[in-house]
Image 1 (spheres, one colour):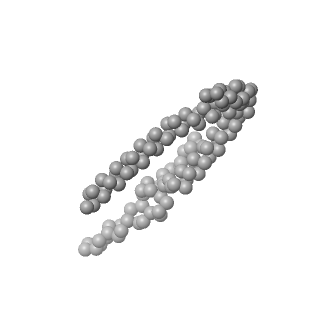
Image 2 (cartoon, one colour):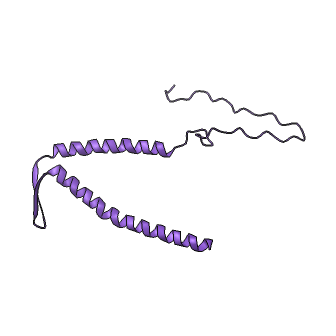
Image 3 (cartoon, helix red, strand yellow):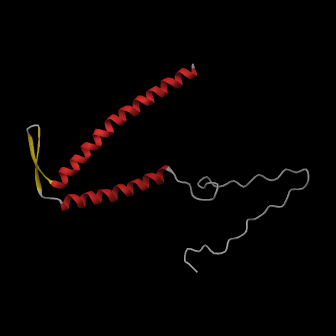
Length: 125
């Protein structure tokens, strides 16, 4: 027998049929934290907690990457020169790349939200 075997299932309990002329009793209410199948629902706080755990793990991996790539490298940009550890230089380049993508994307999202708000106002008038 495997350790994951849930064991024998209990048959579902059947309510007796109501007497003629009487309406059946309302279905039992489930607790607010459970879905229709009886599993615990996800919440915003649980998603945030999971996100924080993932961010902490990624931060540790980035820290290890920077420590292992500590040899200095010369960076030159428009006459500006700096000597940085290789890991820091690569991380800085990744952050700049993320910003290059995120800023126009955020501007587009704001444009779409404004257009949606205008359309909703037109409908309500």
